[in-house]
Amino acid sequence: MICPVTKRVKEKKKIILNRYYPGKCKLVVKIGQSVGDTDIIGHCEVSAGRRLIKIAHVLGVSGAAVQKYLTRRVGEKIYEGEILARRKGVLGLGKKEIKAPVDGLITEIDARGDLILQFLPKPVRLLAGASGKIKAVDDKKIAIETIATQIHGFVSIGKEREGIISIVGNPKEFILPTRITQEAKGKILVGGALLEKGALEKAVTLGAVGIITGGMNYRDFESLGGGEDFGISIIVTEGFGTAPMGDDIFNYLSQRQGRFGFILGSENKLILPDLEEPAEVRELSTPTQVWRELSVGDKVRYLRKESGDLLGVVKELPGEQIINSGILAQVAKVAFNSKQELLLPAANLEIIE
Image 1 (cartoon, rainbow, N blue to C red):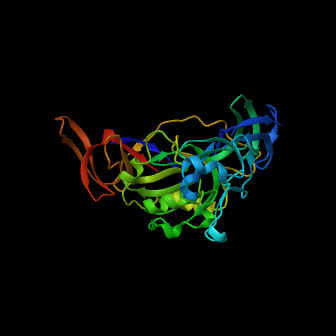
Image 2 (cartoon, rainbow, N blue to C red):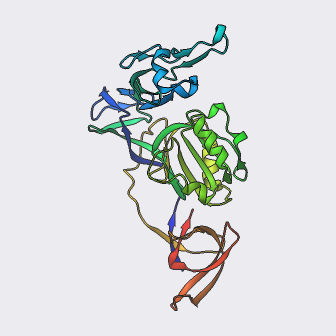
Image 3 (cartoon, rainbow, N blue to C red):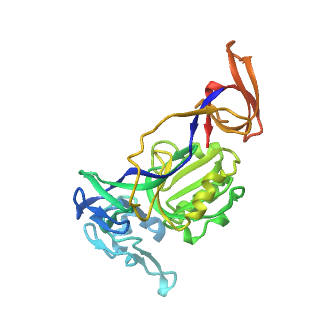
């Protein structure tokens, strides 16, 4: 029985890497120009939004009384660390102060005594992130032709983010909150057979940009849905529940710890650009469908989206049998991570390499 083959780690392929502007951007490159990974390709201004600060609640006063405790008024700027509001205690005791968490502009104070702080735009240098050639420029992005390795997972969520690859556990370990440290900021964390919910929450709090893990509880993954970005991008490589990360992905990423990469949660892939473009490269890769004979021991994906058991290993190849639908078909016995074993039609299986 012949099945389609998917290779999860695709090394050294020529691709188009899109570098999206984080905000209003002035470009400093042109089409056809060669760039290095650390070259500046644009100067941008980014406003990260706004923050609500509960002044009345923190100071323990009524909403109507908040104005007399503020050090700034609506329309004024304040900078991170400066005193935003202060309430003196009796005889100087029990003084309470609120400091500005970021540089911002005070835009509103409502009747409840809640203050809206609009973040001030910050200058950001947009780096190429990869060595290559500028192929196209438009009002949203710069397209760079480069050589990169692409890694595809099982499921993913989140927007495109960039960061440094950091190993936080071996393929069979549970990723617990204790594994996530202050060094997680700006990192794409890698490892584990199960990502614990507490570890995920801590990673978001500490500023990690992404997580690549073998397994994750289905309920935890589903709770991240709804179309809103939650501050981090995740790729699950093997399946739901406890699922040790495959050696193909873990070994490759272990060798590239400390390297810069792009995690694309919406496209279920990680991109690792080569630091230097080789003298001879292959043409832009075009997807081609490869097929081969299914064998005992193959890792396979069960092509049914509504199933929670999607990745498993072929245990037996009994040949032709009549399946539940009453059709005579070539079947395979597949063992899943959940320990369940099922007889499945070979036509619904995809080999994972």
